[in-house]
Length: 281
Image (cartoon, helix red, strand yellow):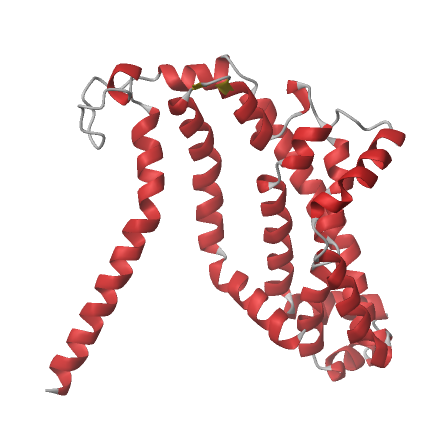
């Protein structure tokens, strides 16, 4: 009896998991299906939307790669994302360590105070940041985003990393320094390896923000050569009331699928990063 009940429970679990997997995969399948559809097939309401009612075509990919600066958008996005991640890590790791180990009883309060800055709506910072970007002569360049985006990531990431650094016993660092390592060497060899889930969470958070942010990218960069994927694709493939749906789907799928696979690969560490950072922080 117990075996039957256990088998039934597992069957129900797999059924629910299968349903949610199908639900999560449906948008990606729909994107891929739409990419290769002809206009006559896509816009005919009498056609079955889940089938190809006309021969598939590669014309939509040709429009994306030859009629837009899509590869330039991808390159700009990667450059901005990598630089934002580097700047965030260089600022967040020392800040989190200092607040955890060196700031004494005020460390946690200061960490929370820094985190509260993250809760300020980005729209409230638009005018002052716009003035800063204009004064620095970075308007209409990708460097405007490199300067602005860390103002969103840096207030959050030290608070997140503090939870990981608190979980590292001080005795491990002390033993490393007794063995002859400097404080920096002890951090490099003990604290950072143990805190890899938190560091990966910071990388994913910073990278994802760069991909998703739209308002500042649209306001600060107007030339096509300096746009990222979010603004470049929408302005190039949405012209008035004309939507190039197939090419839009291709642009989205090319970016979304690799990112989704990467997130899935690091999912366990990513979840551990947020949960431990929230509990310990």
